[in-house]
Image (cartoon, rainbow, N blue to C red; front, side, top):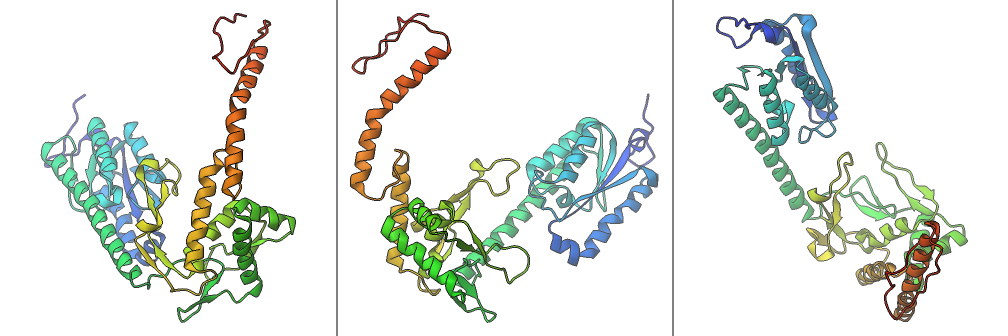
Length: 381
């Protein structure tokens, strides 16, 4: 069947036999609430689809991506649904205000162009109509996608540079731990709750005495003492909650430089190689202290001195290095003892596990095991 082409147009009867999809997106919920004119302009693209020849009942609107960034298609259900419909050859036209509304990532954008080219789907914006199979139209679409991604990259660089410049002066507001509180005039003070102050000072003192976060947690649990925290949910001010003691919570308190009066920025970076699909906060890697972007001392009121903070970090790192040997003790002599015991017991533990594995498999001949030479391979079932 030969497709009929309308005079002076790239639209054929085959295109009109399929659906037209209007993709609507705003990058954040703030833009959805405050930039309603842009959202209304995108909804008006439905009229442009009818002007191009599609009946109103054949025009579908995809607005599930309102309030979602176009930097990645991972969490954009609307874009994923559109790609699925195009792959099933149900779409004759994809309408968007501009290329950045569909995708701000070159891999997603070129995947869309390639899929539209395979099934013959047209792409249109507020001004032009493009046929991805044509050389010049595909060239323009590719350049539009490149400029859209470059624009996002440039905006990100400018925002990060401005934030770092402000952080170097200590003026960029950072989330404060539960032991500190920011007043309305911007001055940071200790938490006015004396019980919170006393509990935090107790944690620092007990860590100096016991030498490990697990020992501190055991002490707090034995004394039935809880740890204060301040979850950031909803608008400020945020209430203080008391949770059962956990080693991870104690380590976060000990690692926080704000309790030593220091203002820190750039403590963590995102490693793309460690990011996991479907997990937004994955791939976050802590940086060594000497590689922090900004570290200003004596900015906040302190619970401990800077030297004590550095000593606590060093001890936590030492505990972490020795934890692989099954030891969570604070003194070097005990670590050496535990390491020696582990070295002696490890081969015997492995032999015992092998013997049990042979028994489960039905081996009846007894095993003759020796620690002075390797296990003989002549044993048969």
